[in-house]
Structure formats: structure tokens, C-alpha cells
Amino acid sequence: MSIRGVPQIRALALYYCDVTGSSKGAKEFARSGLFEEFLRRSSTIKASTSASSEDAETAFATFVKRGRDPHVRATYANGNSKTVGLKNLSALECERHCEALANEKGKPGSRPMKSRHFTKAPSVQGRWTPFTFGGGAPYDAAP
Image (tube, rainbow, N blue to C red):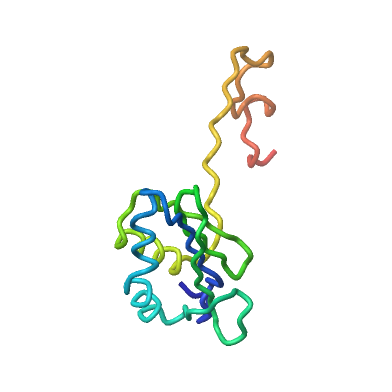
């Protein structure tokens, strides 16, 4: 997704293990034609070997990490990064996750709403009513 025509994704890195079975789909996605097709379809992503390449807007790299579960990490223009696990997913599902990360704006998720605090001890003053401090007269009444 872009903000004012500027794509927000800066780097997309795919990490997988070349030995374990949980990385089967991620390994297939990286080594088959799905990876190149994903790069071709995505207009903002250009293949490069490092994130500091001058001609590429976005770097997409694959890394082999032995003994680790597969995951994809996206870095955005505002400095935020988001990681999505790809454990035991197929190559097409890995592609869907990469597309979803490429289309995001990179803003952090909103915090969940806090629950209200309820006390066991009631107030000493009593509950508030509109007549608590005004003596029963409304505030906008003329004297």
C-alpha cells in the first residue's frame, strides 16, 4: 500500500531452514518460480541482494537459518518491522503472506481497549448525581 503514491515497504526478507520439514513450503516458494512471479507482479518490489541497493526501491532477500522456523520479515519506511511465521504452510500460502505484508502501510496495530476498573469498596461520598453540588438547581438557570 502506498501513502501519497510512495510505497511504504522497504525490505522483505524470507528466512527458512534447508533441513527441517516445517520449512518445506517456504523453501519451495523461494526456490521455485513462485518467487520470481511474485517479484514480477509486484511493481514496487525489485529483486536485489542487499537492502542498501541504490537502484532498487525494495530489497527482497532469502536467508537460510538452520534450526529455525520459517518466517518473513517486512521493514517499512517509518522504521517499523513486522514478522509473520510461515511454519508448515504451503508455497501459495507463503506467497499470500508476502503479498499481505507488501500491501500494508507499516503502522503498528492499535492497542486493545483497557477494561474498566471496578472497586469492591463503594464511595464514601456516595454516587454522583446532577444535584450533588448544585443544591437541586440546574446550572444554566437565571437567578
